[in-house]
Image (cartoon, helix red, strand yellow):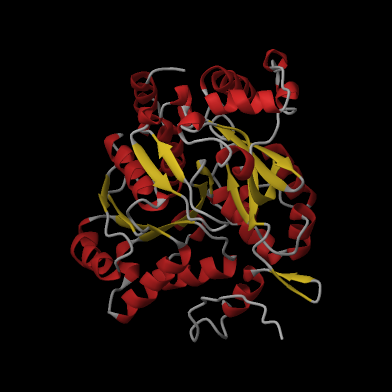
Length: 417
């Protein structure tokens, strides 16, 4: 494993194009990660022994795919926190984050800044490719809750690194305090060419609606939006675009796919958003591509940073962290599509050029693979054998006939008599 100074020098001395040009090393990176964990992570050494794995036989990607899946139950809760860290030493980390606990008890996740550099690249991709923050003065307002929860400080530290890398960004951290967000917008946003709100999708909508009610003209600030934490529909994105005055929704917003355990795993790009918006208008094509009528989050990812596999229609991820992940079963329902397979699918449905997806004629997508995510497989209500998902309800509330009368917030419960 390289030292921290080398990692920082590599990140700050390389452009986003150079950082995203190393995807061909993905499988070699996996084998190297496995070897580091086998040599230096006590919990993983015990885990391999429990499963009868001969570590010397894991020398290529085919052999790697035979390794046991890590799960939150048997690995994360089966070993102590220090045992899951490199050298069994939690003090090698410099910060702690807490997961949401949406599927049970929240866990602590030690982190160190060096392992967040790969995650920072996901933010850089959004701020560079979508928002052109390398050219425009940008006010980034972090609206995620601050404190131990992973989103707020994680986002803040990544944005600080972009500012250090000569992006023209100033970072404000009001958290989820609406009054303070509005004060920042009123006093600081006029001083910048564009303003970015980063937060949980339902909360960002609350901010926009409440701000409009207080007389804030969002369209005056060239507003951009960054989301994380929830699947939303293209009707919802279009609704927010109307309220912010956006005329280029593929470039004015982006959703991040992230977890407390793995960091940010992928991000929406103008290309992935354009594909998703086209699929929203062509449900038969979406059903063919994803195997379900509902529309998942669709992002691109860097396999040299976070590597995805699919197990029984759920996602498995590998990536380096203070608590490294080797074939970690994150239990999100979804799948993986290569860049080439996505273009083949689009070609089969009559799309030959990005302009047919309403992207600019000269736009060139990055050739990164796609991962699609429906969310947790168990976040449903069953009604007479039919699985009802929150997005089945929310898309109805987002229709033009209703969206000015409702907040869009729902709580889906099956009442038993």
